[in-house]
Image 1 (cartoon, rainbow, N blue to C red):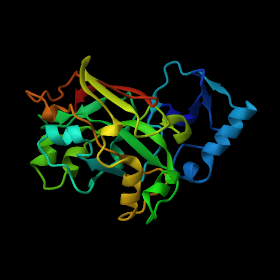
Image 2: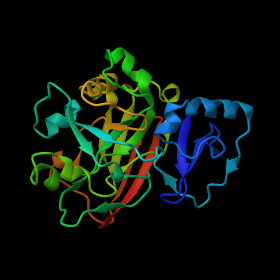
Image 3: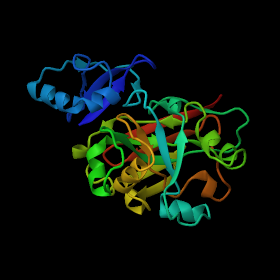
Image 4: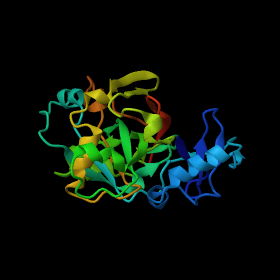
Length: 283
């Protein structure tokens, strides 16, 4: 199942994408796709409504797609979690997940304009598999149970400003939390539809030139381990988002460090989870 949100920013309505490509309105079932919806069996209610054929079709002509989950309580990120990315940046393979936080206010729609911050010269892209939590995760007993708490998966662009991130502070938050720095979506794909999260291809291009092309099998710490690990140090609540790391090919690790400039267009996709497209502009 592919859940989505459509409409003007701040006024999105909930929907679901059918196998035939139609968008159905979920407003009769829920006011939004958020933590409360995910925690209260919302996806099961949608499945029942789909089976009953009771949901109205939405004419999506001219309508914006928003992030597929509203108001995440937190966005937890994992750095250096792909072997190829660690190698290209000259970093050793981390013995434990590298964890940092990103302002939840950075989350925008998959096709929204992304703003290059004032004073930036090193804005970078990162295609990532996002994990959306559906059930409260606190001190999980083992990674084997961790995926039971996952509501679904989405495409995420963990946009980063490398000078802010690496030179202006010993922590990474400054370079990760600029406005619009986390396009998410187009859909929240439930686990039954997404398949094995460790067998997904990830790709990203800039102005049509391929930059990243890898798979989640290159992760150092897999999704189940990350959810379990994070639950030992923080409570993961329904609606929270985990960005699980990016593969090789970011501008930071390429010859000439081809960072993003106003007017650049970034396209990214993950197998089965859809595609994003953003044009970058000056803040």
